Length: 316
Image 1 (cartoon, rainbow, N blue to C red):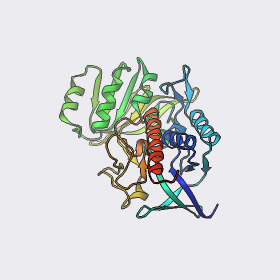
Image 2 (cartoon, one colour; image 1 turned 135 degrees about the horizontal axis):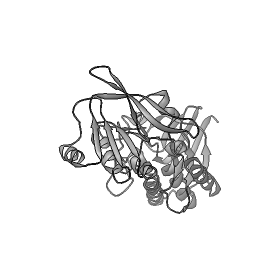
Image 3 (spheres, helix red, strand yellow; image 1 turned 90 degrees about the vertical axis):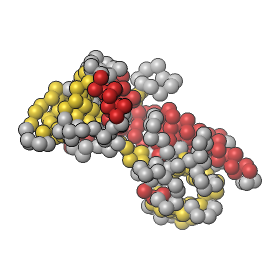
Image 4 (cartoon, rainbow, N blue to C red; image 1 turned 180 degrees about the vertical axis):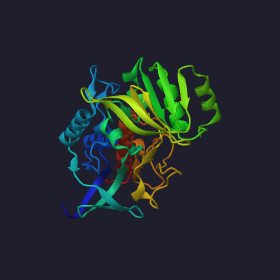
């Protein structure tokens, strides 16, 4: 598709936040348009077993859940576009957004739900075992490692918090840090060092994730001492990469207010940004919870805020 398209509601992003926003906006007869983005379905598309999304007694698959949300969004009246936004102009309403495919959208309101991505180590073996013993979210996947030994990579608040959380499930948690000191807050470090389930391996980096093929699962990590160059092989059942997240907000720089890490800012208890008519939902504005259910809840909030905004403007 190319040319110019006008819409009351443009939703940018298609994870739980984007799809939930689309469902609620469509049910409000707003005929939303959703541009799916570079990773349709978001992070759940690389998540295998999902046990913590409300409404499902049995384990479900992340891609299946996203497909169901997509089908529901289209069923209630969302126009779904397989493309991604490359440029925006939020200086005046209607807001202008351009896609890689050459379409310009003129939108009376915009919901930004572009999500965030976990930062990974960049190892080929890490990619191979992602979802099969390698994870970027302890609260999402820690339950699967009950009574097992796991490793956490990182040295900041996120890594320490993930390690402490995992002690509720794992029999042993090994924190691996490439330096000799942690960057995490002192109070978190004190809790970490006081926990008998935690072991810290200093001055080491993960060089390779090693595992079995049938079934695909993690069995060991190959570590390299950053000071001596010595290699050791560490037996573990899982690896949690906790070196931070990066919100997908590059195209909004200079357009929307964001914090020093790039997360979009909004008014407390709402989805509203400082620009009337621009709303945010999901991990793009949430660095604390980062769960599918909270993202979906924020998508609902954004759609309800949009409906109220458009009604006040007499655009409904």
